[in-house]
Amino acid sequence: MPERVETTSPDGVDFGWVMQTTFVVTILVGAPIVALLSIGTELPTWGARAEFAIRVGAVVWLLVALSVFAYAKRTQE
Image (cartoon, rainbow, N blue to C red; front, side, top):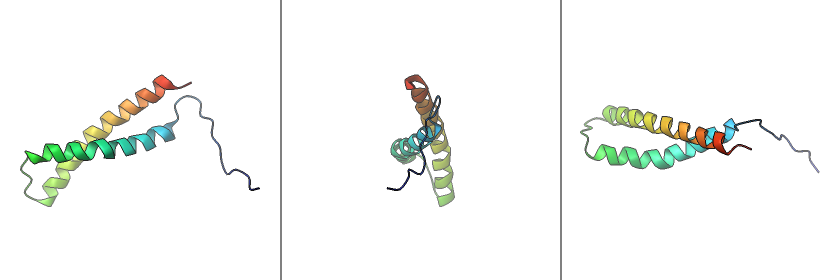
């Protein structure tokens, strides 16, 4: 039987979980938000579209990251 490669027992907040959850939730929540907000915005070039997505996505990412961290901090054992 092969030995286990690695196990962790984090003290406090599990930052790996926070990063992975932030990544997934940001995509799931951020993509629809960017799409909805872009409907009423004039975006004539691909550069303008990318810049808009980055600006909105950064705000969504920050809010999600802070929320996930707060949740992890509150529910830690």
